[in-house]
Length: 539
Image (tube, rainbow, N blue to C red; front, top):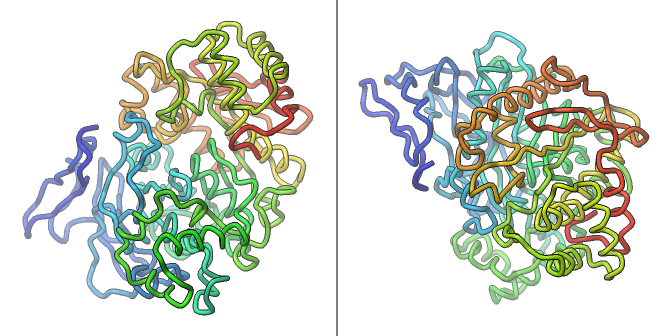
């Protein structure tokens, strides 16, 4: 994956220029048609844009869907970009939202990050398609992970060219405001900022409006849009499902290893804002200085401040209630949902124990993860060892820690959507084990992404180089595309995938041998649900 420098395609003068991709992106861009004035041109409602052709796929990168959010626009609702008259080159990824350097990603995942420059002119999206104007292809809009604090749409594992080429869908990835730039709650601090709430998700809604208004010019069907994302991206999807302004802008939803049961309360959000103001030594009558200070200073101030801009807020305007609490949102009752998790999510985090542990260490770690008493911990471990006799102590810990965190919220979201009985729910469990780092990472958080998006070769640092990757990727990407096209993920290469209900709990197990299982590891699920206190991250 190479060094972490800006991956960009440059054009030189009026002669044909080979794209220079910084940072070790795949050499597919060698085929890009980048002669001056010779790239494909598409019409948008703000003006014409020029892209490139990558191995027969049309690609447009860094397309503005909103104006700059700098200065007086910081924290405020987004607005559409000013129209332009010339043809705008959209051949390079745009700015990432200002953010702190990633600290949670393991190196194997960080190697796939675009690491492009940050800036507040970051309301940009990227489009890949097999054809312009003609056709009504399903549209798949991907929201990156990183919680609500970090990330961007330029990771190599998010690249949409392979999905567009092989599955004949229109792929879109989106950048939007993050952390305090996207989610600082100022409505209760100053009258001027009464509408300064959930800017990051309002950005996303504006991006979906761009898709509605423009995607037909890229061969896409604005009446068949699927939103999907992993981790924080899954949380963004769940939140959109509860936003009145997003209603009608998407027609299917996919949450991968991410859920959003509850949003931030306005009271908690205000406390976070007050903590940030205190750290910056600002009074309420000095709040305008937040809009004027360099974004680097504001980003640096986030260190050690709890709750400031941590995520979407129930503001009573853009988000009227918690996304999935006490039940699935009525705003998206008729939207089919595909949702799932991976076996050892927690191995994504650099602090997770990966080396062998003894029984005493296992007990200690499970107690920390679940906050249960000693007797309950012993019973829980016994249930998991019975259900997974071939797993080592450290694997048992990793799976229990995952199930008491990530998986708990995913289960809750699936159950509540299924209980609504208005649209089908499809559930999956990804268990394929990565061989990288001597196999110690196993089936970690984010590992499913390159398989879903046909990018296992873009993610070799994550997946290794084995031939078995391709067959599994083919099955998963086909299922995701089928869901986007029809609302059901059944494909010939998989067992028939029936909808999830709270009675049967049909779940597709994705591994080298894929199978549909009703309520897999039921005893474990019930044991986790019976814990006296929820583990970290549970709903």
